[in-house]
Image (tube, rainbow, N blue to C red; front, side, top):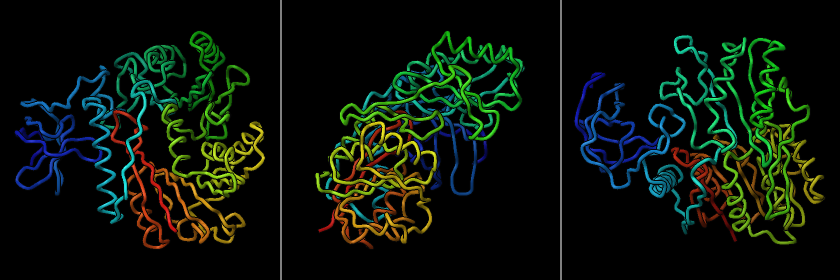
Length: 435
């Protein structure tokens, strides 16, 4: 179908990325802004051999699950794709995506489905990257997420899903950047919120003048931000103000406090992180005599709470700095039964001392690529329980098949965790057991 063609369609499904799905003359069409059960006139924006893409022009019938987006910029900003869908329906859609991946990719089905895990759906995001663009025609600096066309930065004034200390201040940040001599040389700001401080990491392509640095410090003082500068790669990040910022978050149910640096990986949703740890521990069922291996352990987000309940836990992580901070966090929390190892878990480490030991239980929290490489040599014969935390249902389903077919586990339970409300991102957790 030609670009810009208008056609009336019935939306029959929701795609994995949150777009409505229709079919015209047997060809799939993905419609931004449409929901299942709706009829709409749409305009084709892109035509491919096997599918078309379109936007809603006129909505003729509305889904009962359609709600009014809270954000004034929804539809322009691509940071959220599902604000027009009731939060409860969002979770149902994510459950369906997980189930379809298990069936289609893993060819497995959980013995039971866990109740979905969810928390407050607004002002939850404590970590991320904002794009910055100096737009001469608008005589201002835009700060925000990208539009659906990633060449453009969405012109937003506030964000409803960002941490409450940051979301209402997007426009103020842009206005401040507009006054800098280096306004055109700042492409992004990374942000990280701890329990007591919010850090902004300013990436700048040219050195900042003393005047610009003074303006940044004044803004930080006024709004309570910690400002870091990044003139080059990751190793160039350093604090501007205050001299020694401190970022941390607590896990009060486990008497654990985790210190981190602004570019470290931490779970984006703090409230959901606490709920997720509680669920992971419930599924892991740690006993005082257990020896547990935590793979892709990061700062020790799971490792240290587990350590409070077991005889020994070892964490393995591929980032040297995260391993160092995990060890420091263990020491600061008075935990002496946790050890940490640096290893790229996408390589073969079957000869490593930690891999050759007998572990009663295994916990994994891999990135989107999953854990298929490490599952070539783990879990060992002594391991009878595996808890797998996933940020991509496709790789979880693939790895579930490995655990079931190769290692003899049962997929005892699985469910979704709504770590990213109003987006199509599917976070999930699964329990594998064997006798």
